[in-house]
Image (cartoon, rainbow, N blue to C red; front, side):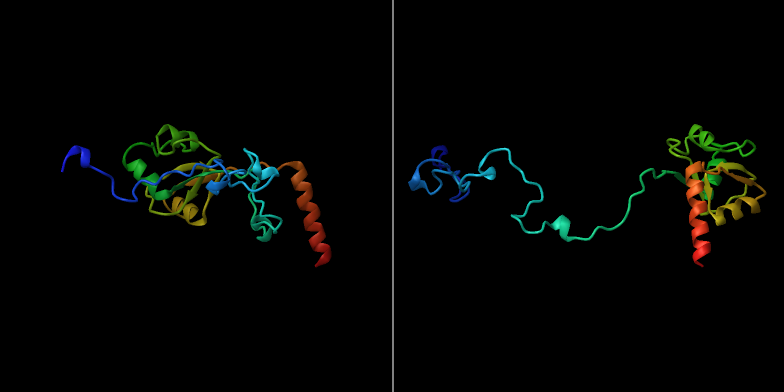
Length: 174
């Protein structure tokens, strides 16, 4: 075997189709684009169009709802708080809130507040200020002799009026 005898395997290199090279090539004249109209032109993408058939996105039912102003809370377990106290990242004697947790490096950023969950055990007496706390988390903190202050969410006046009207309507119908 010599260098001038080296070849690719048969069929490994396929020659590209040269379109628009006359009627005899099979892809002449319109060049495989059909005849006339919008899609014969370049730069056309008719999103979701299925040739007049009912498109898939209209055939399928609409489901679910994404809340427009959904709050994104940091979730932390009482066990994680205890391990932070054991590692001396948090001082159990001082009040603990979002700012203290971020400063201690337990949370990365404040987001919309903190939701306290009840996984794990807590032995230290803590004074916590959180946005939400599960029943098991409250029980665990109070059992250890601590206290939880839950920040009440702001209720807009218009929303409160709507709630009152809705409650009154339900009371009349019942």
